Length: 329
Image (cartoon, rainbow, N blue to C red; front, side, top):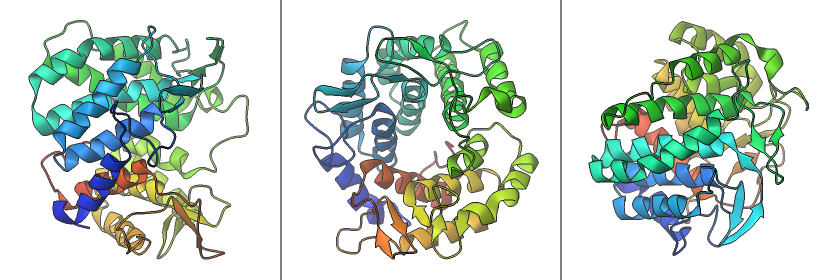
């Protein structure tokens, strides 16, 4: 899976998971969340599936709430989880910029701009005086008083992408310098702002590589961070674990690590991880399970998510430069 043709089964599967309204479920007729939906759109973008990708944005536009957010989980037209997560809401800006860079459709960008404004307003309404952004509002529309390293890192990337879109469209007063600098400072220098009300998530690999993927650290700092925890999370010959103490490598985390490695010039390591995950493909349909429990030699959970397929497409693009937007992350 090193070129567009070999990745098409993944793109076709993502389309198979898309309903008539444009929403992309985890699996056909499965659950839907805005972040993974947007990730799946990005996979379609890479493969040139413009019509299907635009249908995905149509669903985002039709389901956006008056305050600019989305609910955390849907199934078809029903809301399953009434939380409103900030990193889910922010990610549409990254998806929109990614789409524009692939298809150079100015009309698309103009049309989606009001939705991006509203989503960004919602996200920034959750920013604290310390710079971190609270992770969600609950079903009663009350802010849940804690923040996530991975979530805030993703938000930082999305807010930067929003400012790029604003610049492309000639919109003024959307540079967000203070908001971005405050968020970055919190991620770099205020660890006490994160995981205040639950057990630290440092055991999750995403907290290790996501700040690197999203430009919180410079290249030299990032290389040191990668080196420091490499043995904690990477299983030689298999890929990246999701949770440090669990014998479980996951495809999406491995792919995000690949993109983070590519970002800091560690292409050789990125290629090694990519070759490792290719060993886990289901040869019958060229799709990937969520992960592999190597202690038991079993795939788990028994699902093949659309967003895992998208992550593989994005990782392949970052390594093999399938198109000119390979370094989006």
